[in-house]
Amino acid sequence: MKIVIAYSGGLDTSVAIRYLKDKYNAEIIAYTSNIGQKLEAPDVLEERAKKAGAKKFYYEDLREKFVNEYIIPTLKAGAVYQDKYPLATSLSRPLIAESVIKIAKKEKADAVSHGCTGKGNDQVRFELTFKYLAPDLKVIAPLREWEFKSREQEIEYAKEKGIPINITKSKPYSIDENLWGISIECGVLEDPWIEPPEDAYQITTSPEKAPDKPEYMEIGFEKGVFVSLNNERLNQIEIIERLTKIGAKHGVGRIDMVEDRLVGIKSREIYEAPAAVILHNAHNELEKLVFSRELYEFKKLVSLKYSQIVYFGQWFSHLKECLDKFIEESQKYVTGKVRIKLYKGNCIVVGRSSPYSLYKEELATYSEKDIFDHKSSSGFIEIFGLVSKLEGERSKKR
Image (cartoon, rainbow, N blue to C red; front, top):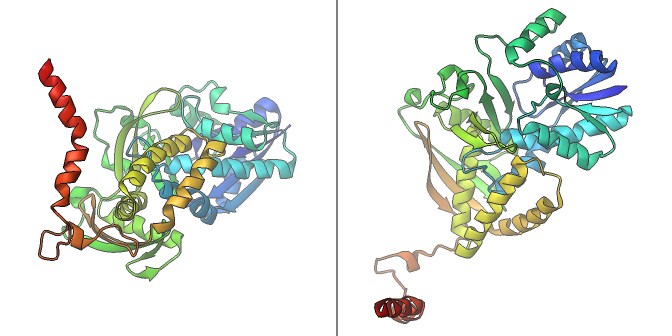
């Protein structure tokens, strides 16, 4: 039997390689992708995977594909799960799963595997993608099968088998990182009453220790895509990396939330996503400037559904394809600049401009530049308030 596993190099997938090899007497092929995480050198990961029991190791840089095909469409959609989570981990799973399938087909594998738990969301994201792209391949989820009940037991098993890992019992956080953000869970974070300790945060400065002076920046968009930072045209990866660094310095992007997992469990998660928080804020404010009220409010409904689709692992689905068409059309006027102020954990939009703006100063102003016909309002109110008048008259009859 030949099995391709999505390999992160962490505790779960390192232990999973040995487990799969021993239980299924299988040839294990480990696949690792670079999606912007703090990744160890490919040769180090290959050595670890092979020490764990893998026969082959594949490595691929997917950062550009991740940005162009996953991050940008989701930003255009304004998709933020339950109003807080910018879907960093959620976005990466279908991308990784798609690549695992490509390796499985190349290697003529019998099965694919992942290192997700039986009560998390990632198992769904991986397996729905597997089902869509390769419905005939067998899917094996070791963490739903094995006897380990805690990460501490996994650590002991890894030590027994000589599997090198980068985790200790004293700091047992589960961390997932990519270009769009970091998710941190487990350990003391499982108590939603306890404030996250500073050692749980990986990149952001505590707002209390952030600079006392605010920092301003300008972000340029073209048709919903971020294309420049402080009037310097850059590729999207560079912009995300710079915003992550600057935002982290000012304590921007920390998210502490109790979220509803797809399987029905509530979980406490913390996230760090400086670039995502900044870009979502900027993009949303630019849409407010160029959208009609009806379009803005309707797109909020689409954003809600889109965030659920991504979170639930339905990236490859007809519904998402349909929503993508609407979203792409909505972005044709989302061009302009947004001015951002970063200060002590806050990301504040302080300016916005667009050649397609629906804001007209001569209509909004209360100065002598005002061209609005105030007299026309009385007729408008009379018609718009007709139902209110009729309801009021009816109420008196009671």
